Amino acid sequence: MTDNRLWFGPIAFVLFTAGSFAIGAITPGYSHVRQTVSELGEVGSPGQFAFSVLLCLVAVCLVVYASAAARSLRELGCSAIPAYFLFAMALSCAGVGIFSFPHPLHNVFGISETVGLQAPLVAALVCRNEPRAKQIIVFSIIMYVVVLLAIAINLIPLVRPASLWPLIKPYFGLVQRFLFASWFIWCAGYAVLLMRVSRADYSSKRTHEMPRAA
Image (cartoon, rainbow, N blue to C red; front, side, top):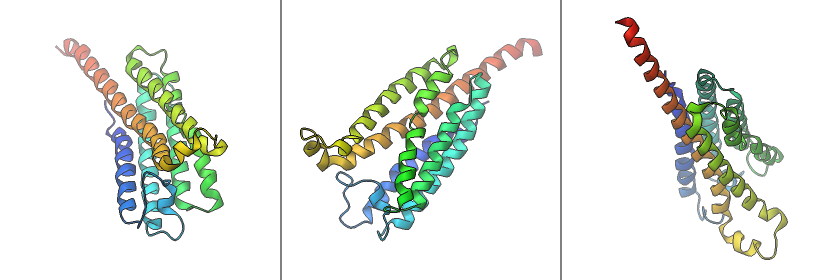
């Protein structure tokens, strides 16, 4: 039967997106196009407390979602390892929120998000032998490619190539958000597909049980 806690995946996506825009609206002069997400909650900013609360709420949603995903994956006959990567992302989100920029641990937790970003790949791998999970596999692979592309673009500021950095710099806020958006879109879509498979399994079991009951 479908675990309604899977809805916390899409909720995390909506919460992060809406919350970021809301905090940006109360931050004078803030630009979602040019500035990073972390600047919304940097020490001394108007949105510091709100940003910390937002990321902690997102983390809670991801933890609940992870527990539901683990249950759904086991029912599907797959490993629950993707749930641990969701939990890792929850831990990273909470850390980034609690330790506001420029606290040294802010960047540590930010870098640790690299672990959670691998969740789409892991989700595809653990279900590779399960025919019922074909849509999950295809969707996860596609979104993982998008995530990798987003990671590559976000690494440009580290090397700052003369040919690319001048083009990226004015839009770095959008570049960073591309990475977050790609992962959270996978997060929400993965939840929906898990629910779809769970409903299909439940309907199939009911269909097979009806003749026996008669």
